[in-house]
Image 1 (tube, one colour):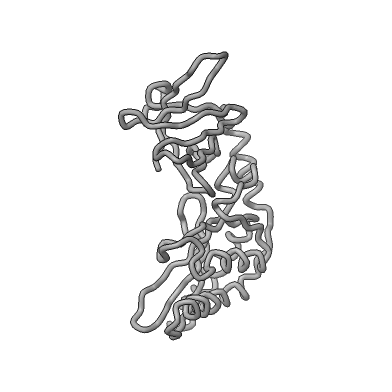
Image 2 (cartoon, one colour):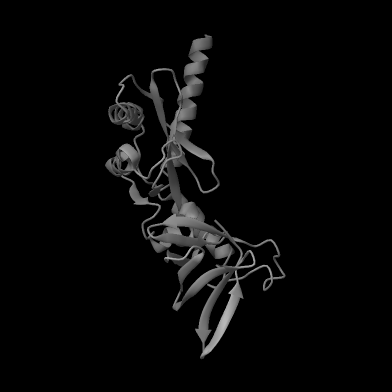
Length: 244
């Protein structure tokens, strides 16, 4: 009887997960997983992208230029992760999907491999974990689109303007996140919306900055970040609170 109840509970739990996954059209894959030291080591990130494409998701790498729909509303996407479960002489991996609030929406079974070669063991364990998706029966139902469009109507988007601790007294704790992209960072606010892109230069702590139609630089002075550009022939230096 106890085993029967556990099977029912597992079935209900799995069905609930599958339904919530069906609410999402997009999956975003990071360029590097935490358990590996290099981006796309052993082709793990490419394999992850291919996996979700195979099962019908629209997939983007985090360092790609994300579509406006996701850039303007991060909650329209799921975020993929591959997690290593350390084991003696056995490589163990699981594939995880999280929403924009870091809640786990789906978690695969643990894939295993006893191969000694790292390339083979990680690939084999990943493919073993990916078998869970064969029974997921993913089909986008538009649910996330509906809920997000309702939220957008009730909460108008902010203007595409940079604020700082000094220039926005209504929200003294406001700051922006720096997310790595190819050759630099994209700066996002809490919506999250991409408000600026920074591109590396030969100097540390100096970036070429693109903010909408404006171009300038972002530099650090006395421990604070500033966006500087020319407006009507005059140099404007605007503080911006960035967390890298």
